[in-house]
Every structure is written in structure tokens, then in C-alpha cells.
Image (cartoon, rainbow, N blue to C red; front, side):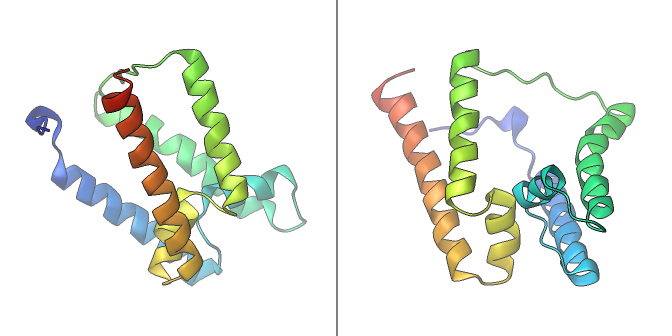
Length: 144
């Protein structure tokens, strides 16, 4: 295995992680809410009175931030080496895992682990292990 040094961006990655951590900490400390994307979006799909505003602002921020970034930088064009069928199947599996695991990577991996939640540790180990195993099988055993 080798590192693609042209695309190795530890400082940008560290800054992005710090921003995500700060935003998640602010949401829980200032509003008492967990920044799990599936939970935030799920709450918008079955809204409760007085609970829509912050959820809508959160989702708009998730969608708006990349748009603002486009004003200041040229983003690299992503290269996805999978067909539409594979992408749809992957999305459905992620959605199923999110429902089965009672949360998503942001809820468990960022917010749950920072609160030392044993349930989030198990969930994070499970989805990271599943991802590692999938990449190993697809890339090294099947050669796709």
C-alpha cells in the first residue's frame, strides 16, 4: 500500500475535524441536541411543533456550506469508480444500517464516542469493521 502524497491533506483534514467537533459540541452544550444527521433529518420528516427550526437550519447549513466554499475555492471533481446500481445499493445498505444501529456515523462516531457511550463504541466498531471488510473483499479478493 502506498500513500497518494498529492492528495494527502492532513492540515485540511484536521481543520475539518476540529470544525465538526466544535459544531457538535456547541449543539449539545447550547441546545442539548445530538448532531446525528439521521436523527436530525428524521425529525424533519416527522416534525414536532417547536422542533423544526433548528433541524431545518442544521440541514440547510449542511447543504449551504459546500456552496459557500465554492465561492472561495475550486473543488476537485470526484471520481467515482462505481456504477449507479452499486451506488444505489450502497446507499440502501447505509440507510438500513443506520436504522438497525439506531443512528449514523455522525451520531455514534462523533457525538456518541465523545460522550463515552458504550453503545456508540460498539456501533462505530461494527460499521468501521464492515467498511474495512467490504473494501478488502471488493478490492483484493474480487479485484473490482
